[in-house]
Image (cartoon, rainbow, N blue to C red):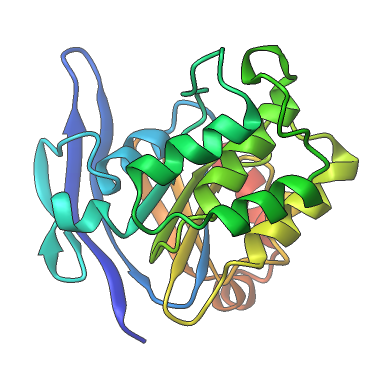
Length: 231
């Protein structure tokens, strides 16, 4: 498989804290990865560096063998945990907002996803619940024809009943020529759908690789490995 992303000794240090410390790994095309770790482990900073929103302090970070920059941003779709729409916007406005910013945004896909998630296009994002906001963010991000999707905690705020639908929506965009990275601490929900896993602890990559291979080598489920690493 083609290498979508390569990280070598990647590090990010802020004034008083090192958020990411010496991460080395590769992401392949056509695969879905779980980026695992508790809050504060460095997952978000790592994703933001890939998205080109945060500059590494040290190390090499390549997207399709090119440095992260303007060209990579055209093919990388990042969904943050924070709300990033204006409160006066309606759900419909969010689609128009994305259409103005991203050439690869598909409005018909957005409308379909919004409908499937049972959202009202006339609702204002400043007045909807956190769960509904999570669905809007996800629909907007997945409506881009991106090559690398970075979804930071896509199941946050989503009730147990709706999670299956959300995961199904994410899987609907998976293709042989793109890569999906799902950041989460809800390991049980992701174990059955991901191809690869990346465990981040204290900013360091403590374990990563093919999910099935790791299960066989460790003789444990990904959930049990998670408990062992972070207990």
